[in-house]
Image 1: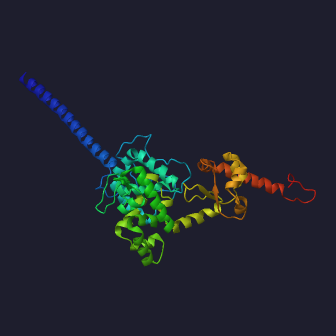
Image 2 (image 1 turned 90 degrees about the horizontal axis):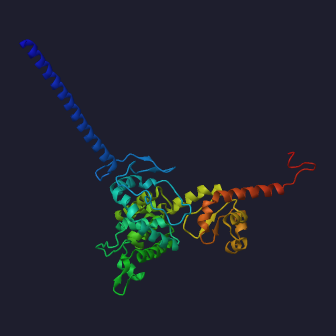
Image 3 (image 1 turned 60 degrees about the vertical axis):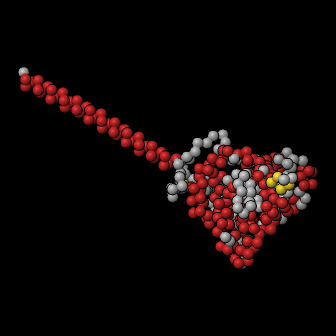
Length: 382
């Protein structure tokens, strides 16, 4: 009797102990798994400044993005990404090889702020886009204000620079931003007008966007001295003789352009690189639009006015008035800066394939109609 009782007590003890042991191990395992999951999620979604390496992932066709596969900021899907206020085709090129390492580190460091800016800065970008278009400038130049001030209108530097575009006091006076006791460099619209005038003046001098951005930072004198020392106007040679701050300014601009646009573009290429890009397009007989916001669209190849006017619903007599020598220039294989009515430039780009198709069909029909066939032969029995 006593022996049976002891055996049952011993059996119950081991059974309870085993259950408790198993339950305890399961709870510890679940806790450890939750800690590991939380740690991994945080590391993926929050690219912090201490994180040195980001694995490159595939981006838009033809490009490699430096951005993490997942973002650490939740964005409204309806506003994510800044779209231009116009829809002409933009020149898209791979990230400049001279800037890849710099851009990798810069985007990593500024990732969170730049990502949030895509949302909160949308109305500011819209204002800047409108003004830059009015001055026939690429809207991507707004990214210069991003790297100058992070779009802070009240940012003031010890040098005297103020506002989103960090305009100097003498520039404020020159462009009428200081009057009636007010300093309008802090006004987004008025300061953008002044910046557009300044950028136009600098580009008219250098005919190179990278030198223009360098001069915006270092001044005309600094860039001219660097050009003289380099014995070249190629920015990538000139940059060696520019201050470190100015070299970084240009690289920050290219990096920021890439972050927002997903590629490089006209304003991230030197004049030499643009020339090379242009030459690579020459044999395609296709649209060459080096400044997508210019009123003129540069074309070359088999385009004809009949197809253009038909697809875009433009009166041919009006087209002829705006585009003298159009037929002769294209027939001679030259580029032609075609001028279209307001709002038709975007339509031209959107319907480019259809226009080219009709141009090709007309060219083929004209060729067949003008062909001289041997006696007693027809087009059908060839």
